[in-house]
Image: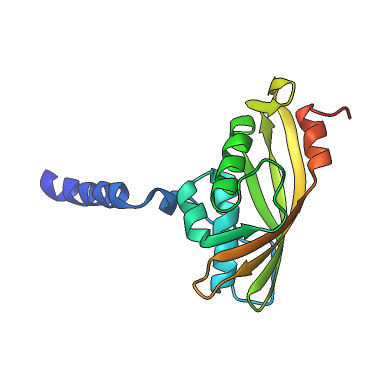
Length: 178
């Protein structure tokens, strides 16, 4: 009898161990969605990318972004392609380890999707500045970003145009005065 009780538990553990790391990451659902079904491949690409920003899981970025991904509003110093978001996410997660990303609004028009993203968390880590590393004191982080993605036929983001409220973020981090 104990073997029967253990067998399902062992099966569940083995399935969990075999699952890819991103399987445990829940994809954020948009609070408001217009123009497509929640299962649409354009929506799925955007949700995967939001989940990447929230988790820092590079596997999600690879699922969301095309091999020829182009950041059309590339910040100075950030590499083009997949390396750029991976680098930015690593820096941001080092500063805000409990980062949360909510998709407030999502509007789909054909192969393009526009999002209003809400980033929250606590600055408890380290953020690099030109003057050196800045250590967080638990400050609340709460800012918005707007993204526009072009999604290719394979359901992956090929192009991204984005605007973040960096002024608010830098003030909250303590890089700039309030």
